[in-house]
Length: 261
Image (cartoon, rainbow, N blue to C red; front, side, top):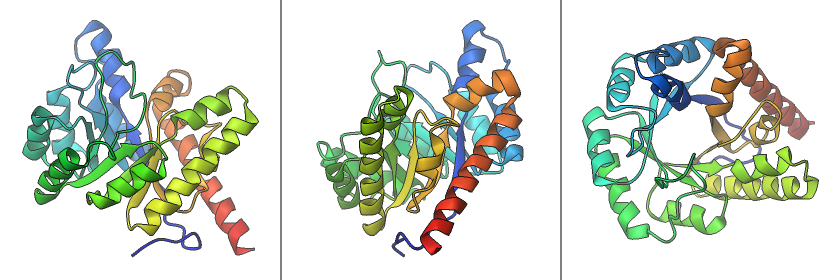
């Protein structure tokens, strides 16, 4: 069923635990444990857990994925590059979903969306292979109509809209750029929903920037990680997730009320 603006979907929160592993790996050993963080996140209200298994294993490890798949009660979203190695790992563990992302060895974090329009054939084969194993496939893309249309053409189940440019504009207090980026995201969300694709969003979202994204009725899931792990240093992971959950729910409820009025 295609969602429309007057049928807002329930908004889910996926918590990315990558940077718990980053802290662990800074000095080796077992602490802090990403699996423990995942369990805490679920208790605090997370609807799913996201983990990015990078080719260089800079944070999440193969063992982390094995343990997460075996022990968490909520769906696991495996972020990964569309490489033979990662496809084989996904087919072995069969997470609830795989989010295909671009990956460059030199980047500190994912810097932009996947170029689906420029790699249709290759990505279509990967999407089909994962879906044949019962795995839902998400494509992490910039909020661009061409990318949304390409994602629909190759049969993706989900697009996750990159919110990084919006968050950067908001942090810089550039009102015009912020408004422009929000409109780009809103337009992409509407197009994806009209195409029958489930819409997620994420990257760089904070307490201060989450509300306008959460208010968009077509978006059904936000994936947030680095900010929550950083905020946990000051307030604890449970508190950070509960506050984010409350801000998301309030924004969605307020927006729904405004549309109904």
